[in-house]
Length: 108
Image (cartoon, rainbow, N blue to C red; front, side):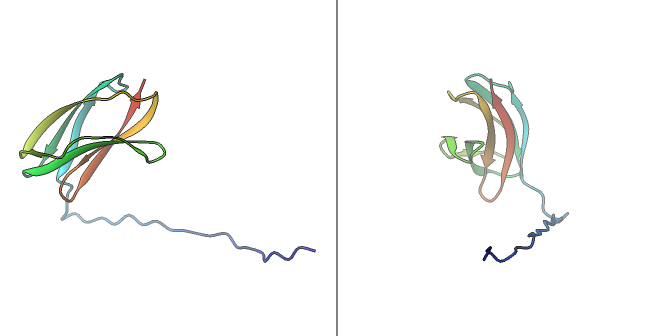
C-alpha cells in the first residue's frame, strides 16, 4: 500500500525587472583569445574610478582564480591574466564596487 501523498508539479515564474534608469557601469569590451590556453587578455570599460577584481569560476560555481583588487580609472582598461586551468568552460567576472559583468570563456 502506497502511503505517499501525491505531489503537484511546482511552477516558478521568473520575471525580468527592467529599469531603464540604471545601467551597469562595467562592460566587458573584449576577451581574447577565446578559447584560451594559459593567458587571457580582457578589456573592460567602467563609468567611474573603481576598485576592480577579476575572478574566474568553473561550471560548478567554484572560484578557480581571483586577482587582487586594484584601482582602475574611468574609461577603457585592460588586464592580462595568466592562469593554468584544466580544459573546460569557465565564467570570467569583472567585479566593481557595486556591479559586476561576466563573460563565458573556454580553456582549450
